[in-house]
Length: 146
Image (cartoon, rainbow, N blue to C red; front, side):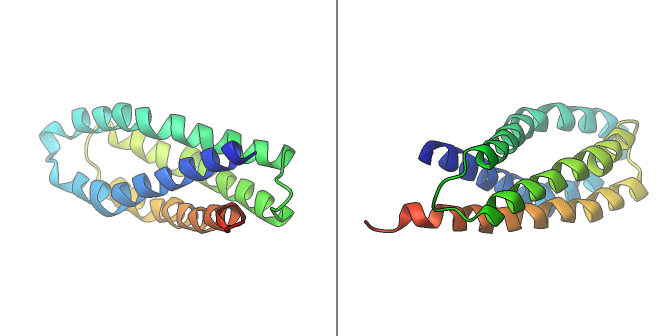
């Protein structure tokens, strides 16, 4: 049970770090790439970032689901369900907002699509921030001195 919870927390905290860098540094710098090389840059970005975010997001989702079925005794039920709901918000935002905007940018830089990507990505950034606080609260009973 501890391994499940630790894996879940690790995936969430890794994704929070990734999304912070993407939101604060990476996405704003898209506008500095230049129009000539932007389509190739965007395609490479999508391919390479997927190697990091897809496995980590999948681990986070699967462990959030597992916690619903194998809930640790010391964990309140509301934490488990809130955690899963927040994962759902992240996946829905990714599928219906960020991925389509990234696809739109594959053909070249579009200032409106870029602004919308940066703006809508705050939803994922804030949701992962909330999840990070939540998983640290979930871990707190494990960290208490026995």
